Image 1 (cartoon, one colour):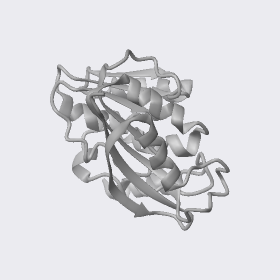
Image 2 (cartoon, rainbow, N blue to C red):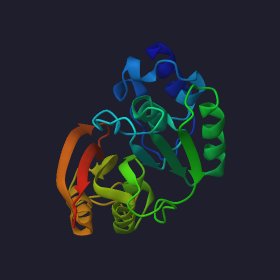
Image 3 (cartoon, rainbow, N blue to C red):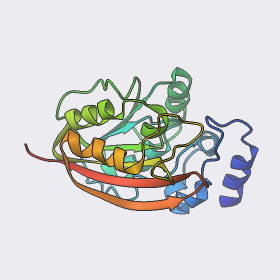
Image 4 (cartoon, rainbow, N blue to C red):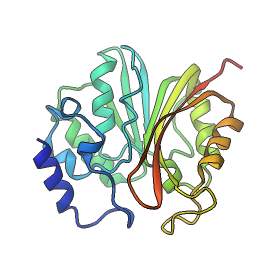
Length: 223
């Protein structure tokens, strides 16, 4: 399986950005990837594994922001059970269509993919137990404060998010590809001022000379 994965990644001629994404085998275990359609691996672009540390409980409602081809949604759906659900939101109609086609080839009946923007999430207030996202917010959105405000709004009290994202290696620098990317301190400050508590960096890895991948957890307080 891993040989196939690495070949797939090597064959990708175009990426969304000029930096290279980590190899899938560096992010996900063999067990996490087993029994999924192989075609999904052609489209995976992430910098972490937000589901790995999520401790999903059966029956939970999960929201994936910038879900892409839907790999994290598929992995999360293994844990939610038939009474739980996973919703993926992405801004690309083409990717949403591909995600919908792929999920039809699996056993999962509790995954939904929706077209939308993560700055204006079309979900009710206090309706979600867990929000996940993988290498989307800091690289793709100038107003990350707005994104975290929306995450806070849709989460239930004591709901949590686990997000994998990129930040510059140099606190004062930025990535040449992204002139508006936030430093780690600015990123965490955006989380704090939204009202999240128990902010924790779960994982930190350097995959590229200019950026670090962080996986961050935070909880929505009762207030």
